[in-house]
Length: 386
Image (cartoon, rainbow, N blue to C red; front, side, top):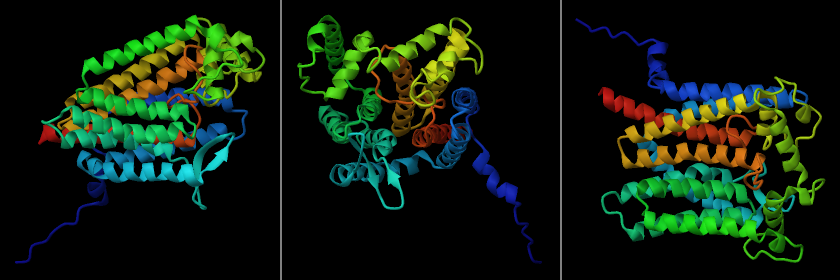
């Protein structure tokens, strides 16, 4: 008697790809995506196809998230070294053959496409360091952290030299988060924090003297010096270098408790806010939705970051824990730096607000990070169910 095997339906074959997604993480992403669409429509509906392009970029990011979520953490670990090596090689190529725009050499022309290799390191850096510490699990020592610092310093130095201070800070933060979760001693962390605090106090105390035109800052370029000095006192050049931050703070303050209402922001729609759909979109959002809207947005980011850290805590391997923790706190860095610079608390460094700012490359990077979190969450869920 011949056995008859029924071929599974198409849905049965593809259903596993749609299962195991973390519901709370999906909810956090949908909340922030909704806020982003609202903000971009209001700020950019009269800027050509900005809103449509933002929606397209968001769909691409969701597609990247879905694809990366299909990979297991073991597969992610396998691509860590090749991706990091590729990123560093491309950064070296940028140094040698890069395209220069507005005084910065950040892009590489591959004839069929122009890419910004520094974006690769936002994901490759935490992947690489998580892979390194996973290999050294159970025998971590000072030499291992020294190697990690070297692995981190090479791309950060190359990116800072382009110059691209914003991206270099993001890559540096992602790497430091991995080292922190791997057990970096507080004896090394506290002195750095103290030195940083003393440096900030020194800048504020001596700002009149050090911000004079003839004073040269050895470690920073002139434009970076101007950004810091503008942060300390934007009224020194209210119609020049201080214009952006002054108008941004006016917009945020004018929003009051409940805001002026959707699409009713005067600072925004009269073009007083610079880069209103990208770096300064938080100012446009705050003007229209006020303190209440800003608190809701902050809570949505806290929800996303907290859920990411919970996924890290539940991860079964050291690689997964370090990677998920670093990716989660990277979202914190993006949001904190963007809101801080728009509010006049931090220097302007050109870092977008996740989900809300317009930008294709940043959105794809965001999808990669969320896909990694979802991959780790799905893997943990399957292990618990087995």
